[in-house]
Length: 471
Image (cartoon, rainbow, N blue to C red; front, side, top):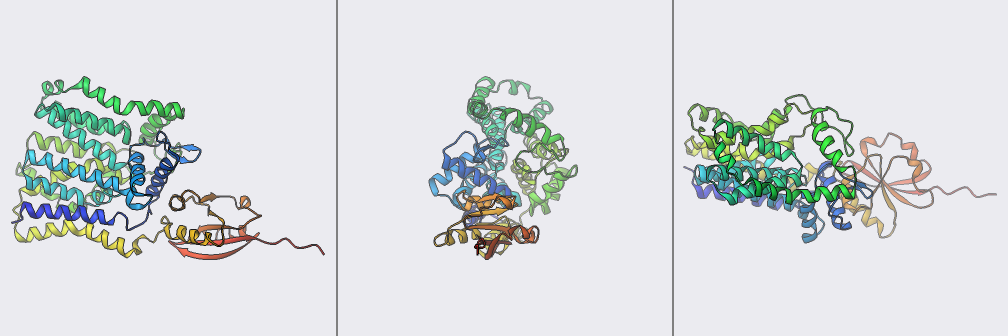
Protein backbone atom coordinates (compact mmCIF):
# COMPACT_ATOMS: atom_id res chain seq x y z
CA UNK A 1 0.00 0.00 0.00
CA UNK A 2 1.33 3.40 -0.99
CA UNK A 3 2.24 5.64 1.96
CA UNK A 4 1.76 9.36 2.45
CA UNK A 5 5.54 9.76 2.75
CA UNK A 6 5.99 8.16 -0.69
CA UNK A 7 3.45 10.54 -2.20
CA UNK A 8 5.28 13.53 -0.70
CA UNK A 9 8.57 12.28 -2.19
CA UNK A 10 6.93 11.88 -5.60
CA UNK A 11 5.49 15.41 -5.47
CA UNK A 12 8.82 16.92 -4.41
CA UNK A 13 10.57 14.99 -7.20
CA UNK A 14 8.13 16.32 -9.82
CA UNK A 15 8.54 19.91 -8.63
CA UNK A 16 12.34 19.52 -8.52
CA UNK A 17 12.47 18.04 -12.02
CA UNK A 18 10.39 20.92 -13.35
CA UNK A 19 12.58 23.46 -11.58
CA UNK A 20 15.71 21.84 -13.03
CA UNK A 21 14.27 22.04 -16.55
CA UNK A 22 13.37 25.74 -16.53
CA UNK A 23 16.62 27.03 -17.98
CA UNK A 24 17.55 24.05 -20.15
CA UNK A 25 15.52 24.87 -23.23
CA UNK A 26 14.94 28.11 -25.15
CA UNK A 27 11.85 30.22 -25.67
CA UNK A 28 10.26 28.54 -28.63
CA UNK A 29 6.50 28.96 -28.55
CA UNK A 30 5.35 32.15 -30.27
CA UNK A 31 3.22 33.29 -27.33
CA UNK A 32 5.90 32.50 -24.75
CA UNK A 33 8.56 34.41 -26.71
CA UNK A 34 6.18 37.34 -27.30
CA UNK A 35 5.34 37.70 -23.60
CA UNK A 36 8.99 37.25 -22.63
CA UNK A 37 10.01 40.08 -24.91
CA UNK A 38 7.28 42.35 -23.53
CA UNK A 39 8.43 41.59 -19.98
CA UNK A 40 12.01 42.36 -21.02
CA UNK A 41 10.90 45.70 -22.48
CA UNK A 42 9.04 46.47 -19.25
CA UNK A 43 12.22 45.88 -17.24
CA UNK A 44 14.64 47.66 -19.56
CA UNK A 45 12.43 50.70 -20.22
CA UNK A 46 11.11 50.95 -16.66
CA UNK A 47 7.52 51.20 -17.91
CA UNK A 48 5.59 49.17 -15.32
CA UNK A 49 2.13 50.44 -16.32
CA UNK A 50 1.56 49.52 -19.96
CA UNK A 51 3.14 46.41 -21.51
CA UNK A 52 4.57 47.22 -24.93
CA UNK A 53 3.96 45.15 -28.05
CA UNK A 54 6.57 47.26 -29.83
CA UNK A 55 8.51 50.26 -28.59
CA UNK A 56 5.75 52.61 -29.75
CA UNK A 57 2.77 50.21 -29.62
CA UNK A 58 1.01 49.54 -26.28
CA UNK A 59 -0.25 46.03 -25.60
CA UNK A 60 -3.90 46.20 -24.59
CA UNK A 61 -4.59 42.47 -24.78
CA UNK A 62 -3.76 41.53 -21.17
CA UNK A 63 -3.29 43.22 -17.79
CA UNK A 64 0.26 43.34 -16.39
CA UNK A 65 0.38 40.93 -13.41
CA UNK A 66 2.24 38.20 -15.29
CA UNK A 67 4.58 40.72 -16.92
CA UNK A 68 5.33 42.20 -13.50
CA UNK A 69 6.34 38.82 -12.09
CA UNK A 70 8.43 37.95 -15.14
CA UNK A 71 10.18 41.32 -15.20
CA UNK A 72 10.93 41.01 -11.48
CA UNK A 73 12.33 37.53 -12.10
CA UNK A 74 14.75 38.95 -14.67
CA UNK A 75 15.61 41.90 -12.44
CA UNK A 76 16.67 39.50 -9.67
CA UNK A 77 18.15 36.65 -11.70
CA UNK A 78 19.21 38.21 -15.00
CA UNK A 79 17.68 38.11 -18.46
CA UNK A 80 17.51 34.40 -19.18
CA UNK A 81 15.04 31.55 -19.57
CA UNK A 82 15.24 30.37 -15.96
CA UNK A 83 14.55 33.82 -14.54
CA UNK A 84 11.56 34.50 -16.73
CA UNK A 85 9.98 31.08 -16.09
CA UNK A 86 10.71 30.95 -12.35
CA UNK A 87 7.64 33.05 -11.32
CA UNK A 88 5.32 30.50 -12.97
CA UNK A 89 7.03 27.74 -10.97
CA UNK A 90 6.53 29.70 -7.74
CA UNK A 91 2.84 30.22 -8.57
CA UNK A 92 2.55 26.50 -9.24
CA UNK A 93 4.13 25.59 -5.89
CA UNK A 94 1.81 28.04 -4.12
CA UNK A 95 -1.14 26.44 -5.94
CA UNK A 96 -0.02 22.98 -4.76
CA UNK A 97 0.04 24.21 -1.17
CA UNK A 98 -3.52 25.53 -1.40
CA UNK A 99 -4.70 22.33 -3.10
CA UNK A 100 -3.13 20.27 -0.32
CA UNK A 101 -4.67 22.44 2.40
CA UNK A 102 -8.06 22.31 0.70
CA UNK A 103 -8.18 18.51 0.32
CA UNK A 104 -6.58 17.74 3.66
CA UNK A 105 -9.33 19.66 5.45
CA UNK A 106 -12.08 17.78 3.57
CA UNK A 107 -10.53 14.33 3.11
CA UNK A 108 -7.06 13.33 4.34
CA UNK A 109 -3.40 14.13 3.70
CA UNK A 110 -2.88 11.25 1.28
CA UNK A 111 -5.72 12.43 -0.95
CA UNK A 112 -4.43 15.99 -0.67
CA UNK A 113 -0.90 15.18 -1.81
CA UNK A 114 -2.23 12.94 -4.58
CA UNK A 115 -4.30 15.86 -5.89
CA UNK A 116 -1.17 18.02 -6.02
CA UNK A 117 0.68 15.23 -7.85
CA UNK A 118 -2.07 14.96 -10.46
CA UNK A 119 -2.06 18.73 -10.91
CA UNK A 120 1.73 18.87 -11.27
CA UNK A 121 2.23 15.87 -13.56
CA UNK A 122 -0.63 16.41 -16.01
CA UNK A 123 0.33 17.80 -19.40
CA UNK A 124 -1.02 21.29 -18.87
CA UNK A 125 -0.11 21.44 -15.19
CA UNK A 126 3.49 20.44 -15.89
CA UNK A 127 3.92 22.91 -18.75
CA UNK A 128 2.24 25.75 -16.86
CA UNK A 129 4.71 25.32 -13.98
CA UNK A 130 7.36 26.92 -16.15
CA UNK A 131 5.78 28.82 -18.99
CA UNK A 132 5.84 32.51 -19.88
CA UNK A 133 2.09 33.08 -20.23
CA UNK A 134 -0.68 34.84 -18.33
CA UNK A 135 -2.59 31.64 -17.51
CA UNK A 136 -0.57 30.58 -14.41
CA UNK A 137 -1.35 33.87 -12.67
CA UNK A 138 -5.06 33.58 -13.52
CA UNK A 139 -5.17 29.96 -12.38
CA UNK A 140 -3.61 30.82 -9.02
CA UNK A 141 -6.05 33.72 -8.60
CA UNK A 142 -9.07 31.48 -9.30
CA UNK A 143 -7.75 28.85 -6.87
CA UNK A 144 -7.17 31.40 -4.11
CA UNK A 145 -10.59 32.99 -4.65
CA UNK A 146 -12.36 29.61 -4.73
CA UNK A 147 -10.69 28.38 -1.56
CA UNK A 148 -11.39 31.69 0.17
CA UNK A 149 -15.06 31.46 -0.80
CA UNK A 150 -15.27 27.90 0.56
CA UNK A 151 -13.66 28.85 3.89
CA UNK A 152 -15.92 31.85 4.27
CA UNK A 153 -19.07 29.88 3.45
CA UNK A 154 -18.45 26.68 5.42
CA UNK A 155 -16.39 27.91 8.39
CA UNK A 156 -17.12 31.60 8.56
CA UNK A 157 -13.37 32.18 8.27
CA UNK A 158 -13.15 35.92 7.69
CA UNK A 159 -9.43 36.03 6.92
CA UNK A 160 -9.59 33.39 4.21
CA UNK A 161 -12.75 34.96 2.81
CA UNK A 162 -10.86 38.23 2.43
CA UNK A 163 -7.99 36.32 0.85
CA UNK A 164 -10.56 35.06 -1.66
CA UNK A 165 -11.55 38.62 -2.54
CA UNK A 166 -7.85 39.43 -2.90
CA UNK A 167 -7.68 36.51 -5.35
CA UNK A 168 -10.40 38.18 -7.40
CA UNK A 169 -8.37 41.41 -7.42
CA UNK A 170 -5.29 39.54 -8.59
CA UNK A 171 -7.36 37.82 -11.26
CA UNK A 172 -8.49 41.20 -12.58
CA UNK A 173 -4.81 42.08 -12.93
CA UNK A 174 -3.96 38.70 -14.45
CA UNK A 175 -6.55 38.43 -17.24
CA UNK A 176 -9.43 40.73 -16.44
CA UNK A 177 -13.15 40.21 -15.63
CA UNK A 178 -13.00 36.55 -16.70
CA UNK A 179 -12.01 35.70 -13.12
CA UNK A 180 -15.39 36.97 -11.88
CA UNK A 181 -17.19 34.51 -14.16
CA UNK A 182 -14.98 31.50 -13.43
CA UNK A 183 -15.28 31.99 -9.66
CA UNK A 184 -18.72 33.57 -9.46
CA UNK A 185 -20.68 31.08 -11.56
CA UNK A 186 -19.87 27.94 -9.51
CA UNK A 187 -20.12 29.92 -6.25
CA UNK A 188 -23.64 31.21 -6.99
CA UNK A 189 -24.91 27.87 -8.37
CA UNK A 190 -23.53 26.02 -5.32
CA UNK A 191 -25.14 28.55 -2.97
CA UNK A 192 -28.51 28.16 -4.69
CA UNK A 193 -28.41 24.38 -4.86
CA UNK A 194 -27.38 23.86 -1.24
CA UNK A 195 -29.48 26.79 0.03
CA UNK A 196 -26.59 28.56 1.70
CA UNK A 197 -27.89 32.12 1.34
CA UNK A 198 -27.42 32.97 5.01
CA UNK A 199 -23.71 32.10 4.89
CA UNK A 200 -23.47 33.86 1.52
CA UNK A 201 -24.88 37.09 2.94
CA UNK A 202 -22.53 36.89 5.92
CA UNK A 203 -19.41 36.99 3.75
CA UNK A 204 -17.42 40.23 4.30
CA UNK A 205 -18.79 41.79 1.13
CA UNK A 206 -18.08 45.46 1.83
CA UNK A 207 -14.52 45.00 3.00
CA UNK A 208 -13.89 42.22 0.48
CA UNK A 209 -15.10 44.16 -2.55
CA UNK A 210 -13.18 47.20 -1.35
CA UNK A 211 -10.03 45.07 -1.12
CA UNK A 212 -10.61 43.67 -4.61
CA UNK A 213 -11.10 47.14 -6.08
CA UNK A 214 -8.10 48.62 -4.28
CA UNK A 215 -5.91 45.88 -5.74
CA UNK A 216 -7.14 46.14 -9.33
CA UNK A 217 -8.81 49.47 -10.16
CA UNK A 218 -5.83 51.87 -9.78
CA UNK A 219 -3.96 50.13 -12.57
CA UNK A 220 -6.99 50.21 -14.90
CA UNK A 221 -7.41 53.95 -14.32
CA UNK A 222 -3.73 54.75 -14.83
CA UNK A 223 -3.52 52.49 -17.90
CA UNK A 224 -6.44 54.30 -19.57
CA UNK A 225 -4.87 57.67 -18.77
CA UNK A 226 -1.53 56.60 -20.24
CA UNK A 227 -3.00 55.10 -23.43
CA UNK A 228 -6.61 56.23 -24.07
CA UNK A 229 -8.72 53.56 -25.76
CA UNK A 230 -7.39 50.70 -23.66
CA UNK A 231 -10.61 50.08 -21.72
CA UNK A 232 -12.78 49.97 -24.85
CA UNK A 233 -10.51 47.48 -26.61
CA UNK A 234 -9.86 45.34 -23.54
CA UNK A 235 -13.38 45.16 -22.11
CA UNK A 236 -15.41 45.11 -25.35
CA UNK A 237 -12.99 43.55 -27.81
CA UNK A 238 -11.12 41.03 -25.69
CA UNK A 239 -14.02 40.09 -23.41
CA UNK A 240 -16.97 40.11 -25.77
CA UNK A 241 -16.04 40.01 -29.43
CA UNK A 242 -13.24 37.49 -28.91
CA UNK A 243 -15.73 35.21 -27.18
CA UNK A 244 -18.70 35.46 -29.56
CA UNK A 245 -17.08 36.28 -32.95
CA UNK A 246 -15.29 33.38 -34.62
CA UNK A 247 -12.18 34.58 -36.47
CA UNK A 248 -12.53 37.96 -34.80
CA UNK A 249 -10.73 40.42 -37.05
CA UNK A 250 -10.24 43.09 -34.40
CA UNK A 251 -7.27 41.40 -32.71
CA UNK A 252 -4.47 43.97 -32.81
CA UNK A 253 -1.69 41.60 -31.82
CA UNK A 254 -2.19 38.25 -33.49
CA UNK A 255 -4.69 36.03 -35.20
CA UNK A 256 -7.91 34.51 -33.92
CA UNK A 257 -7.85 30.88 -32.78
CA UNK A 258 -11.08 29.67 -34.34
CA UNK A 259 -12.03 26.14 -33.25
CA UNK A 260 -15.14 23.95 -33.69
CA UNK A 261 -17.85 24.28 -31.07
CA UNK A 262 -17.10 22.05 -28.10
CA UNK A 263 -13.41 21.56 -28.97
CA UNK A 264 -12.50 22.66 -25.45
CA UNK A 265 -13.61 19.22 -24.17
CA UNK A 266 -11.07 17.47 -26.39
CA UNK A 267 -8.50 19.94 -25.08
CA UNK A 268 -9.46 18.88 -21.57
CA UNK A 269 -8.47 15.29 -22.36
CA UNK A 270 -5.05 16.52 -23.46
CA UNK A 271 -4.68 18.89 -20.52
CA UNK A 272 -5.28 16.07 -18.01
CA UNK A 273 -3.16 13.46 -19.79
CA UNK A 274 -1.93 10.93 -18.64
CA UNK A 275 -4.51 11.09 -15.83
CA UNK A 276 -7.23 11.17 -18.48
CA UNK A 277 -6.79 7.39 -18.51
CA UNK A 278 -8.15 7.27 -14.96
CA UNK A 279 -11.20 9.49 -15.51
CA UNK A 280 -13.48 6.42 -15.45
CA UNK A 281 -12.61 6.24 -11.73
CA UNK A 282 -14.67 9.43 -11.27
CA UNK A 283 -17.69 7.71 -12.81
CA UNK A 284 -17.37 4.65 -10.58
CA UNK A 285 -16.81 6.84 -7.52
CA UNK A 286 -19.99 8.75 -8.32
CA UNK A 287 -21.93 5.50 -8.61
CA UNK A 288 -20.63 4.45 -5.19
CA UNK A 289 -21.47 7.92 -3.78
CA UNK A 290 -17.79 8.42 -2.94
CA UNK A 291 -17.91 11.96 -4.36
CA UNK A 292 -21.11 13.13 -2.72
CA UNK A 293 -21.69 16.04 -0.38
CA UNK A 294 -21.28 19.80 -0.48
CA UNK A 295 -17.49 19.69 -0.91
CA UNK A 296 -17.45 17.56 -4.04
CA UNK A 297 -20.48 19.44 -5.33
CA UNK A 298 -18.50 22.66 -5.19
CA UNK A 299 -15.39 21.06 -6.71
CA UNK A 300 -17.43 19.60 -9.58
CA UNK A 301 -19.02 22.97 -10.38
CA UNK A 302 -15.59 24.61 -10.30
CA UNK A 303 -14.15 21.90 -12.59
CA UNK A 304 -16.97 22.33 -15.12
CA UNK A 305 -17.14 26.14 -15.10
CA UNK A 306 -14.20 26.77 -17.44
CA UNK A 307 -14.89 24.14 -20.13
CA UNK A 308 -18.61 24.95 -20.12
CA UNK A 309 -17.88 28.67 -20.47
CA UNK A 310 -15.59 28.09 -23.46
CA UNK A 311 -17.76 25.44 -25.13
CA UNK A 312 -19.40 27.99 -27.41
CA UNK A 313 -16.49 30.42 -27.62
CA UNK A 314 -15.36 31.37 -31.11
CA UNK A 315 -11.68 31.54 -30.12
CA UNK A 316 -9.98 29.21 -27.67
CA UNK A 317 -6.59 27.85 -26.67
CA UNK A 318 -6.08 24.72 -24.61
CA UNK A 319 -4.24 26.74 -21.95
CA UNK A 320 -7.58 28.40 -21.12
CA UNK A 321 -8.39 25.23 -19.15
CA UNK A 322 -5.69 25.81 -16.54
CA UNK A 323 -8.01 27.50 -13.96
CA UNK A 324 -10.12 24.32 -13.86
CA UNK A 325 -7.18 21.94 -13.49
CA UNK A 326 -6.89 22.15 -9.66
CA UNK A 327 -10.56 21.18 -9.38
CA UNK A 328 -10.19 18.24 -11.78
CA UNK A 329 -7.15 17.13 -9.78
CA UNK A 330 -9.14 17.27 -6.54
CA UNK A 331 -11.97 15.26 -8.15
CA UNK A 332 -9.60 12.61 -9.48
CA UNK A 333 -7.78 12.33 -6.16
CA UNK A 334 -11.10 11.89 -4.36
CA UNK A 335 -12.17 9.22 -6.83
CA UNK A 336 -8.88 7.34 -6.55
CA UNK A 337 -9.19 7.39 -2.77
CA UNK A 338 -11.92 4.79 -3.15
CA UNK A 339 -9.53 2.54 -5.11
CA UNK A 340 -7.42 0.21 -2.92
CA UNK A 341 -3.76 0.99 -3.57
CA UNK A 342 -2.43 -2.50 -4.17
CA UNK A 343 1.10 -3.05 -5.48
CA UNK A 344 0.20 -3.11 -9.18
CA UNK A 345 -1.97 0.00 -8.98
CA UNK A 346 0.75 1.77 -7.02
CA UNK A 347 3.29 1.09 -9.75
CA UNK A 348 0.88 2.33 -12.43
CA UNK A 349 0.22 5.48 -10.42
CA UNK A 350 3.92 6.22 -9.97
CA UNK A 351 4.59 5.70 -13.67
CA UNK A 352 1.78 8.09 -14.61
CA UNK A 353 3.02 10.68 -12.12
CA UNK A 354 6.65 10.64 -13.30
CA UNK A 355 6.10 9.96 -17.01
CA UNK A 356 5.94 13.52 -18.33
CA UNK A 357 8.29 15.25 -15.80
CA UNK A 358 11.09 12.78 -16.58
CA UNK A 359 10.43 12.99 -20.32
CA UNK A 360 10.54 16.80 -20.25
CA UNK A 361 13.88 16.84 -18.44
CA UNK A 362 15.39 14.30 -20.87
CA UNK A 363 14.04 16.23 -23.88
CA UNK A 364 15.39 19.50 -22.49
CA UNK A 365 18.87 18.00 -22.01
CA UNK A 366 18.83 16.35 -25.44
CA UNK A 367 17.62 19.50 -27.20
CA UNK A 368 16.49 17.99 -30.51
CA UNK A 369 12.79 18.35 -29.64
CA UNK A 370 13.29 22.12 -29.50
CA UNK A 371 14.76 22.53 -32.99
CA UNK A 372 11.87 24.64 -34.20
CA UNK A 373 11.61 27.91 -36.15
CA UNK A 374 10.23 29.72 -33.11
CA UNK A 375 13.48 29.01 -31.26
CA UNK A 376 16.01 31.60 -32.41
CA UNK A 377 18.52 31.34 -29.56
CA UNK A 378 21.34 29.71 -31.55
CA UNK A 379 20.88 32.00 -34.54
CA UNK A 380 20.88 35.08 -32.30
CA UNK A 381 24.02 33.91 -30.51
CA UNK A 382 25.76 33.33 -33.85
CA UNK A 383 24.84 36.84 -34.96
CA UNK A 384 26.21 38.28 -31.71
CA UNK A 385 29.52 36.46 -32.22
CA UNK A 386 29.78 37.69 -35.80
CA UNK A 387 29.22 41.23 -34.56
CA UNK A 388 32.67 41.33 -32.98
CA UNK A 389 34.52 41.46 -36.33
CA UNK A 390 31.81 42.12 -38.89
CA UNK A 391 29.07 44.29 -37.38
CA UNK A 392 25.69 44.69 -38.96
CA UNK A 393 22.00 44.98 -38.11
CA UNK A 394 19.98 41.76 -37.95
CA UNK A 395 16.75 41.74 -39.94
CA UNK A 396 14.04 39.07 -39.91
CA UNK A 397 12.58 38.79 -43.37
CA UNK A 398 8.78 38.60 -43.50
CA UNK A 399 7.84 36.97 -40.20
CA UNK A 400 8.43 38.79 -36.97
CA UNK A 401 10.48 36.73 -34.50
CA UNK A 402 9.76 37.50 -30.86
CA UNK A 403 12.36 34.92 -29.89
CA UNK A 404 14.92 36.70 -32.08
CA UNK A 405 14.04 40.03 -30.46
CA UNK A 406 14.40 38.59 -26.96
CA UNK A 407 17.74 36.91 -27.58
CA UNK A 408 19.21 39.98 -29.30
CA UNK A 409 18.04 42.30 -26.50
CA UNK A 410 15.55 43.96 -28.83
CA UNK A 411 18.08 44.70 -31.59
CA UNK A 412 16.58 42.41 -34.24
CA UNK A 413 14.20 44.12 -36.63
CA UNK A 414 11.52 42.90 -38.99
CA UNK A 415 11.58 43.80 -42.67
CA UNK A 416 8.68 43.08 -45.04
CA UNK A 417 9.73 45.13 -48.06
CA UNK A 418 13.28 44.28 -49.14
CA UNK A 419 13.44 47.66 -50.87
CA UNK A 420 13.79 49.19 -47.40
CA UNK A 421 17.01 47.32 -46.63
CA UNK A 422 20.11 49.54 -46.31
CA UNK A 423 22.08 49.90 -49.54
CA UNK A 424 25.08 51.68 -48.03
CA UNK A 425 26.23 49.20 -45.39
CA UNK A 426 26.43 45.52 -44.52
CA UNK A 427 23.68 43.74 -42.62
CA UNK A 428 22.42 40.29 -41.63
CA UNK A 429 19.10 38.80 -42.65
CA UNK A 430 17.33 35.72 -41.26
CA UNK A 431 14.71 33.69 -43.07
CA UNK A 432 12.89 30.45 -42.37
CA UNK A 433 14.12 27.66 -44.64
CA UNK A 434 10.61 26.85 -45.86
CA UNK A 435 10.08 30.50 -46.86
CA UNK A 436 13.47 30.92 -48.50
CA UNK A 437 12.42 30.24 -52.08
CA UNK A 438 9.69 32.85 -52.00
CA UNK A 439 10.97 36.22 -53.12
CA UNK A 440 14.65 35.27 -53.04
CA UNK A 441 15.22 37.46 -56.09
CA UNK A 442 14.61 40.43 -53.81
CA UNK A 443 18.14 39.96 -52.45
CA UNK A 444 19.78 40.32 -55.88
CA UNK A 445 20.94 43.92 -55.22
CA UNK A 446 23.14 42.47 -52.45
CA UNK A 447 25.94 39.99 -52.17
CA UNK A 448 24.55 37.56 -49.56
CA UNK A 449 26.55 34.71 -48.07
CA UNK A 450 25.01 32.06 -45.85
CA UNK A 451 26.50 32.07 -42.34
CA UNK A 452 24.48 29.53 -40.39
CA UNK A 453 21.48 27.23 -40.37
CA UNK A 454 19.76 26.62 -37.06
CA UNK A 455 16.20 25.92 -35.89
CA UNK A 456 15.00 25.53 -39.49
CA UNK A 457 16.20 29.06 -40.27
CA UNK A 458 19.10 30.44 -42.25
CA UNK A 459 21.26 33.48 -41.50
CA UNK A 460 22.84 35.49 -44.32
CA UNK A 461 25.39 38.27 -44.23
CA UNK A 462 24.68 40.74 -47.03
CA UNK A 463 26.77 43.51 -48.51
CA UNK A 464 25.67 46.02 -51.17
CA UNK A 465 26.98 45.30 -54.65
CA UNK A 466 29.62 47.80 -55.68
CA UNK A 467 28.40 50.28 -58.27
CA UNK A 468 30.27 50.05 -61.61
CA UNK A 469 33.05 52.61 -62.00
CA UNK A 470 32.92 55.11 -64.84
CA UNK A 471 35.45 54.58 -67.66
